[in-house]
Image (cartoon, rainbow, N blue to C red):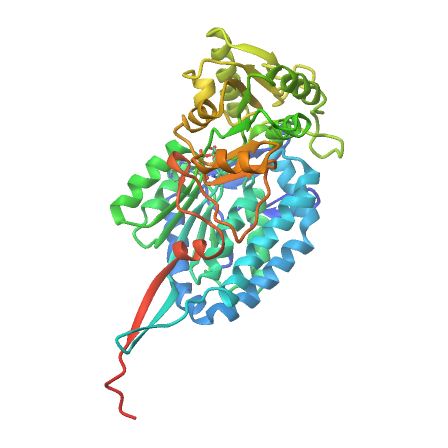
Length: 487
Ligand code: NAD
């Protein structure tokens, strides 16, 4: 078994299939976005390894299914506890791998990864029930039955958190799993795989295949023995996966990109509004939910912009392992180039960049400055497409009707943030906003009981509570007649 030393632990670099490591001859290179440090050569999966993983998951399915929610729950509770016991190491390796803040990984992200596993295990035992009901003396029993092998495909911006957000409900529903993590961030998936053995997971229930999306990811989504495909990533990839799923009519759930509006109504508290707007730079702007289109009432735009720029200019960029750092690097040189390309094209088209607008020359490497583009053309790509970097656009509106039109004038519908000083005004304004999640005077408050997902091109399906089980499980109705019994 090949391993690499990262942050004081040995991380296996091979796929995880049937509770054992499988090394491929071909590998891909993994480096840290913080300073380019080499982190290891990981096995590059092909259709062969994917088939092996799916076969292992299929063989393990009856065992896992027959354990029932309680038996599975005991193993998943041990797994959640193991994540909690390893928060520090998981936080350190995730930060090295994706460059997000160490303190966020320690305090928020890794505890949430444990919660993702525990919550769905408990939900399957305690909440997943439907009262039986009668039809002309016959009794209907509704059940959520395990469906088979779930293929899970995840991005790099919150690798373990987003993976466990799928692994938790899939395993709790009784499905077995093949995970294909993003090629830029394989570390925590590998570490997590070893935790599943420690938790007592039967062999084959959880599998990981590393590799490129176009090869390993494609082979997984095309596999005829997959019962579900759950994907988080970009819209172009989702279109490719939807075609693969169509071939076998495999059910899909998609959590995709966004270009969410943050609307500052005329009666908003501008201190709060500007603080919330600056929070949209979180994770160096690499957050699907970010409110990257800031829409401000024209009467307050001057004061808002002054407050915003004062706060944004104080953002401390640097090494994400340091406590005082507020913004780390972008994930990869390709991604940095993509972000810079958007801003350069906007400048060429005459956009007014009032903050940032280029890579951070002092820090070098993969750091890009927090950027604000003032009043770009509403039809321009910078205002319409997902940049997925620290680049926000600001537009003004004259009244609520115009603000609503602008907010909804997008192909996305993941989230919207409304800032207002009046409850009724905020409620009235939010009513016709099209998005999976609306935050009023807040951002990023998430509860696993709530539905989460995107409208329009931001996704298909909802996760959270029973919605997750509606996807991963086969929902079945058993109708029992009153007659025909021998007793
Ligand atoms: P991506 O679509 O490039 O890749 C995501 C995953 O898909 C990776 O594991 C990749 O290897 C795999 N993949 C690529 N091509 C594939 C193919 N042909 N078949 C199967 N799998 C394939 O996205 P990314 O750049 O890793 O992530 C950023 C995107 O993810 C952004 O658009 C962001 O908004 C979105 N995102 C959405 C949410 C959400 O909850 N809605 C959360 C995080 C990120």
